Amino acid sequence: MIVVLWLALIMTSLALSFGQSARMDIQAASHYSAGRESTLANEGMLNYFKLIVKQATSTLSTPDSALYECEAVVIGNAKSWVLGRNSNEQDHKVYHYGLVDEASKLNINTATKEMLLKLPGIDESQVDAIIDWRDKDDATSNQGAESSYYLSLTPAYSCKNAAFESLYELKMLRSIDLSMIYGEDFNLNGVLNDNEDNADSTLPNDNQDGQLNLGLLEYLTLFTSEPNTRMDGSERIEIDEMNAMRNHLVSTFGDERGAELFNRIGNVAQIKSLLELALVIGITPEEYTTFIDGISMPDQKKLEGLVNILSAPIEVLICLPGMTTDFAEQIISFRTQNSDRNQDILWLDELLGRQMVIALGPYITHTSRTYSADIVSLGKQDKGLIRTYFVIQSQADDVKLLWRENRSHLGWPLAQELREVIH
Ligand SMILES: [Ca+2]
Ligand SMILES: [Ca+2]
Ligand SMILES: [Ca+2]
Image (cartoon, rainbow, N blue to C red; front, side, top):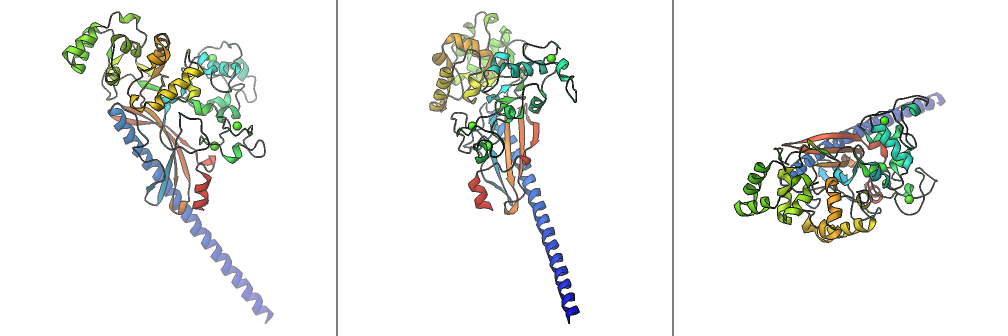
C-alpha cells in the first residue's frame, strides 16, 4: 500500500513537472513570437518614418507630429510608440511622442569650444578632452588629453585624433563619466522617472530636485552633416555665379520679381550666409524656403553642424555664438506663438537685430533632413518589448538609415500607468 502511494506520488510529481516544463515551453514560445512581432513592428515603423521624412522634405517642410501616427500604433498583434521631445517647454513629467530633429542638437564634430562650453553641466576640461579627441594633432590643449595621457592608462589606448563615429566614444575620454553622458535620464526617454529622482537609493545617482538633468546624449549629434544639394537632390546654384543666379531668380519668382531681387544682390563676397543674403535683397517669408533651397554659399560641398532655430531646445540655442538666455527665450516664445512662421527665420532680424543675425547666419538653419526615431514596440499580449533608436536622412530620392541602436536593455521606457494597464 505504501509502495503504491509512493509510486502514485512519484508519477504525479513527474506529470506535474512535465506539465510545468510544457507550460514554460509554451510561455517561451509566446515570448519568442511576441518578440518577433515587436521586432517586425519596429522595422515597419522605421519604413513608415522613412516615407514621412521623404514626403516632408520633398515639399520643403518638416514632419508634423499632428499628421502622422506615433503613439500606441497598432500593427497586427503589436503596438508601437515613438519617444519624442518637446523642445519648447522644459516639462520632463510628460511623455511626448514623435520624430526628433537631429538639427535640434549640437554636432560633436563641428561645434566650437565656445559652443560646447555652454552646454549644461560641462566644464572646460571636458570640452578640451572632446576637442583633443577629434583634432588630428597630438598637442594637448589647455585641460584636455592626448595619447600621452591615454597610453598611460591600464589598459592603454591611443587618442582617436579623428571625428567621433559614435557618441559612446565619450566614455573613453578623460574627465567624462557615465553620469555626464546619460545625465539623470537612466533610460534615455526624456522623462523624469521615479528612480531618476530618489537621490542615491537606486541608480542613477540623482540630486532629487524634481527636475530631470539631461546628459550629453540629449544635446549632441553626429548626424547633422548633409549633402549641399536641393531637397530633391539636384544641384544648388552658388551665389557668386551671377548669370546662374539671375536665371534662377527669374525662373523661380518671375521676370519682374526675379530681376528686382537680382539687382539688389550687390557684392556677394561680403555675404556670410544665405540668411544674410535673403535679408539684404528683401526676400519675403513666403519666398524664403524656395529661395534658400535653390542656392548655396560658394565652395560648400556639405552643410555641417547647422542648428535648427525652429526645433532646438533652449539648452542648444544658448550655445550659438552671441546668444543670451533672454534671446533664446524670445526665439522659443516667438516660434510657439507664430506656428505659421515655420517656413522662414527672417523674423530673427526684428527679434535679435541685424548684427546678431549676421553673426548667427553661418550656424543656423530652418530646415532639416535628418531625424531620429526612438521606437518602442510590444508584441501580442503586450510582451516582447523591443526598443530601437534609428537615425534617418533624406538624400535625393532616397531616405538613408544612418544609425541603428538597440535600446531594449534600458528597461521600461513608456509611462508607468501603461505598464499597469498592460500587466
Ligand atoms: Ca588630438
Ligand atoms: Ca527617464
Ligand atoms: Ca535632478
